[in-house]
Length: 302
Image 1 (cartoon, rainbow, N blue to C red):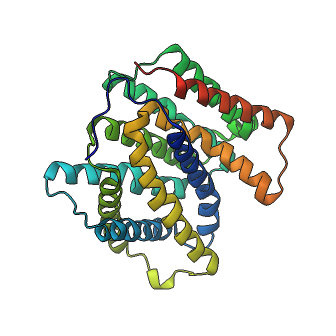
Image 2 (cartoon, one colour):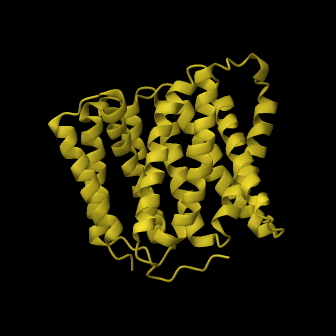
């Protein structure tokens, strides 16, 4: 059983920061893998596949350890809320949005998630006020993401509006889910990760069945299967376990800063793995984002 965080919350330790960085890396790489996956698979089938793999892994580990899901209706409500708001709905929205929205603009739009999280948290969580360092950090990181993606990406605002609204919807879902976990969830991280994945997968598989999607006609190429496995194992199962562990420890506002680190991780992965070059302005933007995230995450919350 997890303990209720104190009003001030524990200070982030080295282990917390390493896990936070690992989560940023897992989610950074997912956007590239999604791009590869939707080239061969229908977006709904890709999301259903990653959720199914994630649920099988998490519930398998959970039950293998002799654990059991709660029988309390309130806890099942938490499984459902976090499974839908934290996984199913944003996964579908992002996967759909990325079919029409350029990655640079998507990164800027997702950068609004920490801003929304901080605003909502300030309204419902008395220990997460919008202090000056937090506001400066949020503003600086959002500017840094825009510079990293390229200000010209903003010229695409208003075109492919449905896709952009989908990305914004995903950002809001993540904000609401993070604040909900911080305020309402008190169950252990592995239980929450397994329960939310189980409920989310059941809902999604039902939606696939009702949609009449022809699973047998899906192009199950090596790339598509690799994308499903990677997204399920790394970006869903492992990432959700770390996420549920860190939110009660770091708080909603601190935790949401991972969405600023995602484009940083994506840029660095491009340099290291794809041989891409960053301009001096983009390297400077990385520094701005890192400094801003450090400012807002190390600030006192109370």
